Image (cartoon, rainbow, N blue to C red; front, side):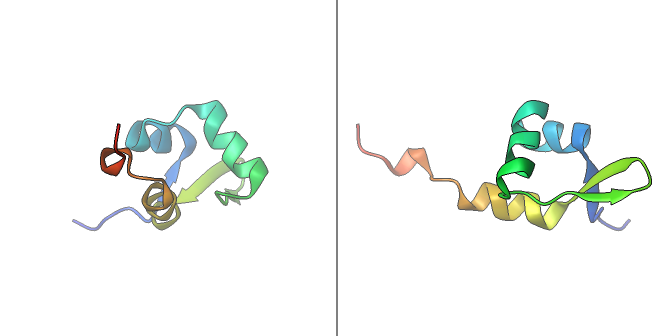
Length: 63
C-alpha cells in the first residue's frame, strides 16, 4: 500500500489535532500552503510534517 501524499482539511485536522479554523489561519499566514483541485482544498502531507517539526518541543522546557 502506498502512502498518501495529500490530505483534505478534515483529514489534516484528524492527523494533527489542529482545528479547522487554525488550519485556515495557517493558510492565511503563509505557514501552510493549500493546493486547490476543482473545489477541493488539499494539503501536502510533507508540508504538515514540516509544520509539526517546526513547532517547539515543550517537553524540553524547564519548569
